[in-house]
Length: 126
Image (cartoon, rainbow, N blue to C red; front, side, top):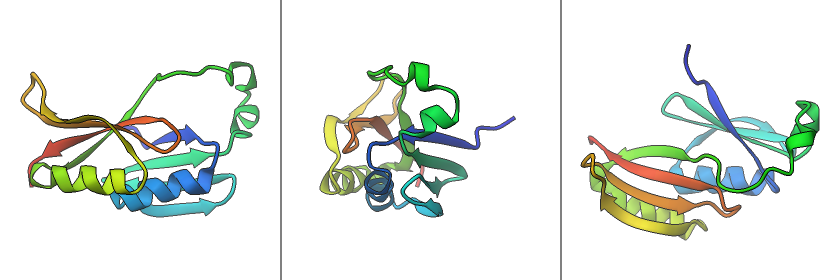
């Protein structure tokens, strides 16, 4: 088994998909705007679905759940961390925590996308 995709329910599918494409250089693989768009990066797809997806999936009773419940982590070459953070912020991300060394020794930055979803950038080998 492998994770094939993670999907955000978005208030504005086009804007959020556009943000991740521009901020992180993810390539678009599906464009069913305004209902769904999908980007790919490193073998994992990131989807952006319209709010009507809750009803389509039979999840409308839970659609009022709010708050920070998950986040995605994107690996960038450690040498490019400052540039990657600046690119994301330049596209509308909010920097929550500047790059720092975790207790595991990884270089990590925490940001929020334009709809408030948290995501992380982690430094990897070049």
